[in-house]
Image (cartoon, rainbow, N blue to C red; front, side):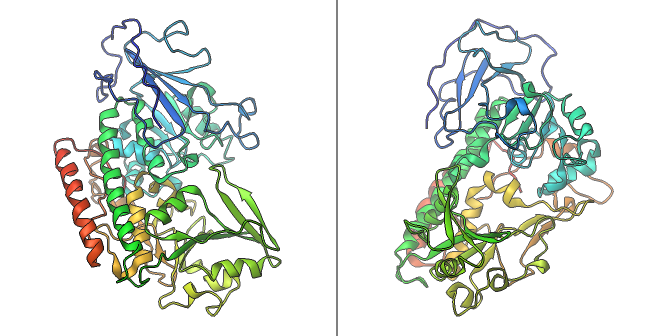
Length: 504
């Protein structure tokens, strides 16, 4: 999807000295191509001389009609935003392209509230964490963002206490910042609609679509060039892995002997089991060289279909009425990813076991009968416990920014000895190995040093995103990896003199 290519010129606006943050980037001088959004479906941008107009597309969702804490916003569309360069005159509705219902933000943003984990990884990637004035760290898994709380404890307030939508301390602090990154559910709501910026990554259906939200975040900091470099690196690596998956799909030398293995995501909530076929999960499975366990046209006895916001179909089966049907689908899968919740602490020792949760035996479910069982979980990267006992999961706050890392891990889970990634496993852990989960804390940030943390460097430390397509083991996939790796190496070489941030 491409943004509208109207790079119109507005009235000349002169910058004034002293109004911009010392670390901020200037407004892009070369606008050509900056409005190109290739994968993300839910936002669009048009550039003018000293301002940008950002609009949420018709494919996006309105403010949630039931859950949003601000009654006046429920069910309404998110309005456009006008981002104007600091030190210039604030645009008015009489200027080209400025909508009458727009929200206005002076950029680069000087101080922000981060209302939930999704935007945080992209702020890290762009190296603009110095703008974070308020964030709830208690559900965050990034080691360096956990160190942020140690270095600058005043930045952290648990926004869900005493009530997730009405914490007076959170509201007061958020109201003092330039912008509040939330979502249309109102996560981290700051109390002021004029400062509300829904970061709708969770509703963009594709894996690379979500990664391209780095360009959305970049708009608020004039970091478009940086975002383009990062996204191209991620896309190149992701596509290299996808090419290897295409080779493995028909490789007769693998364990699956040229057949596509079947994969499914399942969960249990209350008295129902579910097969969760969100579009981005289906894409991951397909790009890994596997196939989804297909749902029937008509829901079997005891089960019903539910439409996801991305247009995909999910099936829920009542317990025990739908047990037989649900078990029959489990029996088709070669690899099963169990999303049943361990929140708030994600303690593997509390995992009751797949057979117990879903009331099945190894005789009924081949994936469970394997040695070791092909049952995986998604909470392979978590934080250590915070004061209130909660634990952050990388699946929710980092994974969207590095789809290549999850794709590589999924391919390792599916293809076992036939594929190995240069990144290793991160988000998935085999449920039979309770020691496989990786627990990280602020001490895992490279800037940590007992009693002598390099706090200032949290704002300017340089990273590169994980590159995961470097190692494979079958003959055909080695050829594919070599071909794709050459392109990846060229892309990396082009970026040597343009270092950038990556999430952990």
